[in-house]
Image (cartoon, rainbow, N blue to C red; front, side):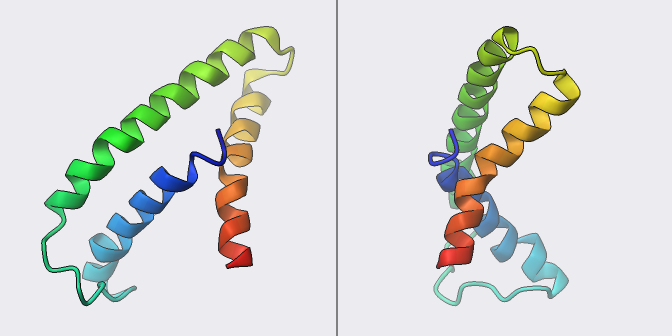
Length: 92
C-alpha cells in the first residue's frame, strides 16, 4: 500500500502548505491557487478516506496472521507505507 499512498500523502501536504502552514507564514501559497481550499477538501476527503479504509482493512487482515506485537506491527506498517513517498521526496 506504499505506492498508492503517494497520492493521499501529496494531497494532504498540498492542503497543509497552501492552508494552515501558509497562514502561519511557514510556507508560501501556490500563486496560481486562487480557487480556495474547499475544492481541494472535496477532492482529498474521499481519496484519503478510501485509502485509510483500505490500508486499515488490509493490515488488520495481515495482523491476524502475524505473530508480532501490535505495538510493533502498526508503527512498522505506517513507516513501510510512507517509505515510497520519502524515497520520491529524496530522489526528486
